[in-house]
Every structure is written in structure tokens, then in C-alpha cells.
Length: 580
Ligand code: AMP
Image 1 (tube, helix red, strand yellow):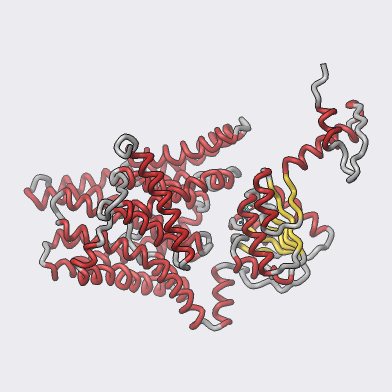
Image 2 (tube, helix red, strand yellow):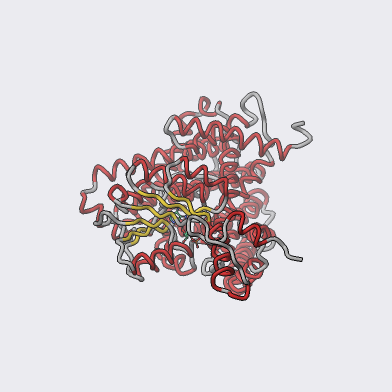
């Protein structure tokens, strides 16, 4: 069975083990990410029992990288990217240089050649896209200034790694037997840069027009399935083309595919549609990383691993910290960026694998890189919580407030009580907010996309940027003394979680929830919602009212229902019966 269906076995085994160990980790109050990595170790070839396919798993992980970077691109405009270039470009280059030099220094101690040392150092220099994005997402930092600098930095690191991967075989050839000349090396460097630039230009000039057009044409068919398919085909297809034709990376390709959609009205729907797949494949990323890990290495080379971790966690972070501070950013921004980059991931695996294949690195060096990556990924959530504690202890209230206003803009708890809180400022929340304001009802709106948050602020609403599912964000909206909570977001399950948190903070609050599907209703009800409005039912009611009350020629004579609504239940059925 395992041999005949390796793909299914790997996906099912990976997801099921990740779920079990992720739940266990959650129970133990540690990051589920550690559970996913442990699942990978269990599913890997170095532990007894079930072994997933070690060549398929990294490919599945790449799909996770593509979907995550696509999602980031959807939130990131070209303007945002250019806004952070002044710090991200020198920052990333300097950090790569520091990590490479430290790696080189360490390899000298091991007695390796200079070239091996450089490749080893490069392996330690680039942070993992998935780990960084997950960490920022968990803390709702993707759209904060700190988050944007970290993402810009990551993109520059990505570009540098693309060049390193292209140059490595050529450089190894020169080192080995003068097979290639420096001229050829320069040529291949120029050619690669040219292709990557061509890809970016094509995406910005042509993709920016064509991709939103394709999506809007697909949306106009009214088929949800085709729309989701279009989004996936575009994200995966462009990422693939970026690698196959332009020699860029999957991550860069997907990022630009998302970014050209950023200004389109449909970007939000595209993000929503890819969310579940994105989460599932991101989990498979961690499983595939865990699979590479041979726990015996921890016993065989403990000092080497400690030194590598020192470079990844302390050396790289110190470099980033100094640089960001030199650019005049606050301590909090500098520390957040340092911590988010204090790990290594997919590029390290690829580069080390290539180094091994070219005979530049030996198995010991590769093992050190792998162990460094896995342990640094496991430690990353711990570093983040230490950072939170450290900041809490050392920042004065004034400093915190200043930071909040500087970085998260108006993220100061609102000074209001007895108010209504709306979560989501889209098609539903937007109309609702306007109506409530006209009736002079005190109001706070929570919205998780920056563009809409800015629109709210421009329209003079009291607004909070963030995810309504977060306790902290609900507290900023003073949920504990609010009168009502109106959840206008389209995802009923997410809304259900928000209801539970809100009721925990304020059991007396009246909660009204938007839903679309019957199966969401019981989930939301169980969590304590007071009223659930199913969008589709309201549309049916309005259409019936229109036919029966307002459009005389229909000649509709449906009597009023007891609850005062026209045309529901049996009467509606009668009315809608086809007439022959
Ligand atoms: P619509 O479906 O057009 O009514 O839009 C829903 C709005 O809710 C969008 O603007 C989303 O950005 C926003 N939204 C969705 N989920 C959340 C959430 N968990 N917290 C805050 N805003 C959200």
C-alpha cells in the first residue's frame, strides 16, 4: 500500500501525525509548530515505524511556500515594498555577510576549506519564509511596519539565495578543475540577474493588468469553483514559471503573483479561497523539515550544533539589531525583526543539499546545517515569547503607547463604553457602520486589512487594525464594557471562535453573527451567539418582499407571516412553484 500510493501516504500520514502532535503541543501550551516538526521526525527515515516519502514531502512543502508567499503578496503593494527598500536591502546584505563570515570562521575551526566555509556560512544566513510568515501572522504583524520591514528583508535574502544557488555549481567548477572561467561566472551571474529582473518587470507591467482581468472574468461566471481554480492556477502557475523560465524561486514568483493582485477588489476573495490549502501545506512544510532530522546528530555533534545555533540565533540577530537601530528604528522594531530572522529553513536545505552533491560540503557539514535549522525553528516561538516578556518588563507604559501609535497607528484602547463593536468593514460591515453612525450609536470597528482600516480612519470611524479573533484586539475595542458585538465577517467558523472569546470577556454582551451555511449555525450557537443572520435567507426574504409588496404586476397575495415577515415557509413554497 505504502509503495503504490506514496503521495497519498505522505499527505495522509503527514497531516494526521501533525494534527495529533499539534494538538498535544497545544495542550502542553507550546507552539503547535513544535508538534508538526516532531510529527516530521516520527515520519522520517531516522525513527522506527511509519516512513513518509522523503522526496515527495519537500515538494509538498514547496506548495506551502508558494501559497504563503502568494498570500503575503496579496497584502503587499509595490509601494509597501519600495517603502522598506532603504533598510531591507542593506540590512539583508549585511546580515548575510555577517552570517557567512561567522560560518566561515567556524568552519576554519573545523579545518574545512575556505570555499566550504563560505557555502556553509551562506546556508546559515537566510531565514525561512514559512517560519517568519507564520510568526508574523500569529502576532498580526504582517501589516505592521515591523512586519513589512521583515518581509522586505526576507525578499532581498531570497533574491540573494537565488543568485547563490545559480552561482554555486559554476563556482564549484572553477574551484575544482578550472572547468569554468571567471568570465563564465560573471556571465551566468548577469544572465540570472537579467532573467529575474525580466520576470519582475513582466509581472509589474503585464501581470498587473492581465491577472486581475482574468480573475474578474472568472468571477463574473458566478462559479465559486472556477474562481478558486483560477486563483490556484495563477498562484502555482506563475510561481512555477518563475522557476522554470526565469530561474527565480517559487517564493518570489508567488509573491509577485499576489502583489499584482493587491490593488484588485478581488484580492480579498482570493486570499480567503486559498486560506485552508495554505494552512494545510504550511503544516506539511514543517513535517517535511522534521523528516530530514536525525536525532542522533544531537548526541554526535553537540558542540558543533551549539556553535551553529549561536551563529543563527545570536550572531545574525545581533547584526540585524544593530542595523535596524542604526536606521533609527525603535528597540521594539529592531528586536522583533531580529527574532523573526533568527532561524534558517528551506534555502539552507537546498543549498546544503547542492553543496553535498557538488562535493563542496561533506555529510557532517550538511547535518550541522539541518540540525541548526530544525532546532532554530523549534526555538523561534520560544524566542518570540521571551521577547514579549522582555518588552513587557522593560518598556514603560508611555513607551508602549508611543510604540503602538508609531507602529500600529491608533492601536490604543478606545475610551468608550456601552458601545457596539463591528468586526469586518466589508460589504456588510461597511453598510452597517454607516447606518449605525447615522443613528448616533457609539461604535468601534475592527478590521484586519490595512487598506480598509485606513478607509475607516479616513471616514472618521473609531477603528482598530487587527484580527477580531484575537483577545488583545477585542480588548483594545473595550469589549468588556461594550453593549453589542456585530460580527459581519463571512467565515462563520471564525466568527464562532470570536463569539466564544467575546462572551468569555463579557458574558452580558449581545452578539449578532453573519453566517452563510446551515452547518455554521450550530457551531456559532454553541459558542453563545444571541442572533444568527443567514445571508442567503435574508436575500430570499427580500426578494419575496419585493415581489409581493413592491412589484404590483406579480399579483402576489401572500398573507403576512406571524412574525411580520412576508412570504416565508409554506407560502413562499407555494408562490415559487413553477406555473404551467
Ligand atoms: P465582506 O465579506 O465584503 O462583508 O467583507 C468582510 C470584511 O471582514 C473584510 O473587510 C475583511 O477584511 C474583514 N475580516 C474578515 N475576517 C476578519 C477578522 N477575523 N477580523 C477582522 N476583520 C475581518
